[in-house]
Each structure stands twice: as C-alpha cells, then as structure tokens.
Image (cartoon, rainbow, N blue to C red):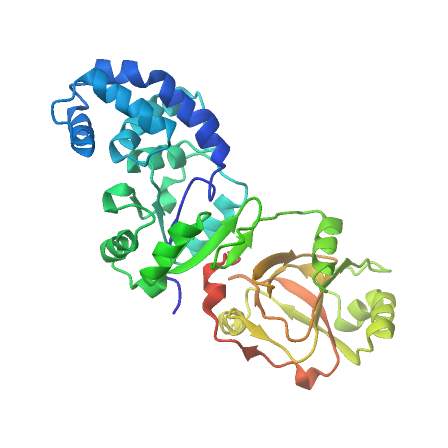
Length: 381
C-alpha cells in the first residue's frame, strides 16, 4: 500500500544525538532546580503528574527536584520531566543560546515528501512543546509548517505497540499506509507489531540485531566519491566531456557526434549494440504519464545506460537492502546492471536530454517488483 503519512523520531534520526545530550540536557539540568522553585505555581499540573508518577502525592518541592535529577541521571522517559525540560529549553531557543540541529539531508527529504502529498508527523519522547521548539528554531529556521502533528509519550511509550495504534487512530490512516522512521530498532519493532511500515536510519554503525530495513545515510556531491561508492556495488558512474560545442538545441546527430569517442570506448568494453538520444521537456503533454511509468521499483533484462547531455534525473537503486539516490546531471553517465531493482524520477517539470545505450532496445522492458519501497523516498519537485 502507498505511504500516506510518515512519522519521524528526532534524536538520532533528524537530529544529532550529541545536540540533545551535550547541549539541551546540560542546559536544562543547570536551570532545573531554580526553575521549579520559582515557577512551582505555574507548573503545578506538571508537578502533580510527577507526584502521581512516583506515587508520592505529598512530595514537597525539594523531593520532586531530587527525583527529577535522578530521572535525568538515567535518562528516564518521564512525561513530567520532558515537559519541564521543554519549558526550560524555550528560553534557550528564544534567546538564541542554540538552534535545533538538523542533519543536512533532513530538510530536503521533508520538503520532497510534503510536495508528494505525504503528511508528516513527529513522535518523540521529548514533549510536544520541545519538538515544536527544535523545529521552530532549527538550523534551517522555522520548519514547523511542514508537519501536520506531533506526538509524545502522552500517547504511550515508544517501545509499546499500543502507542502506534493510538497514533494511527488519531491520524486516521490505516497502519499499513504509515511509515515510521527511527534509529532504534526496539521502537521500530513496536511500530511493526502495530502494522506499520518501518525504516531504520543508521547514522553510525549498522545495527546487527535489527530486523528492519536499515538506511545508512551518506551524502556527497563529489563525483569521485560517488563513483567509488557505486563502483563497489558494480554500478558504473563516470563523467563524459563533449569533443565539440553543442550550441543551442542540438540535433540528435550532433549530440551523438560530440560524444562518439566516449560511446565507442564503452561499446568496445561492454559490447553494446545501439544507442539513441531522448529529450523531454516540461511542455510535453505526456509528461505525467511518462514520469509515473517508472516511479515504482522495477528491473530490466539488460543494463540501463544513460548519459545526461543536459538537465537531470533521479535514479534510485535498491542494492543489498540499501537505497542509493543518485541525482544525475549534465555530463553524468550511469549504468544500472541488468536485474537491479530501481526506480527513476524525472520530476514534475522534466528537462533533460540523454543518450541511451542498449544491448537490445526491444529488451528494455520494465518488470515491476510490486514492492512499495519507492513511496518511502523523496522525489524530485
């Protein structure tokens, strides 16, 4: 089933765990005792929740402060503690003492999903108020308008399946159409038990005991780095240069002539039989049909070889339980080996000219896998 909503964790998923542990936690700890003593009347409901949590209805302020420090020492996911931390962090955000950390890949992915019509939500053990502060005062500015809602431990603990059932009910989306992103496999276990789809984001070492699809996050604009990464997976990636000026709106024959030297070298090595030139522009009345055709995961019976003369296209390769998204631009050549699960996105306003190289053009037919994995990844605008 197509993904209709994505729910994301924060710590270790959208934001570096070190931001939370090295900046936010110490900031709150330093100010906690004074804040509780000075604001005890204003925060009375939270303090009463804490008394109920520890089953000490008569606990005084000093006892509550002692308890809060003990909770922080063991990183207990206490709803009352998280609420107080959020109130204290607000001062730091508003005063500019820090901004909410985001990994570089987060904002582009969120924007792309939003543009695809996928609703976005946050589920974190941190309070909803703290979540809104992080995204409202993030490194990229206020991005709270990207999210349709926020959830914290008021819906339940993150390692309990019922929590995800509660979220699904509140969102009003069938569990199988929900995707949860987290770096913690126990949280993903609970979401999977509730019928959700799951992806584990790996910002560091792989999780050897996880049963969820893991997505190590690596990003580069360096052609040599990209080439090395893809070559290690038997995917050819290289850069070609024309041997003549193409001018404006070159004919297919002119394009082929400009790159014949590179084509001949590749053909001599791989034994390909034919090649042609394809162009697509935003004014093509069939652009939506053509785009949709290859947005789902599929394979081909022969290599898919594309060289981008101009413009761009996004190849997404599903290799060894990992997905590599390669934005191919002018002068990029990619060769996707036969049988490789992948999908291709030309964007809503396509603009590219590419050389296609074949073993047998008649054999270049898409065989769709039926896997909905492509729905969980960003597309071009």
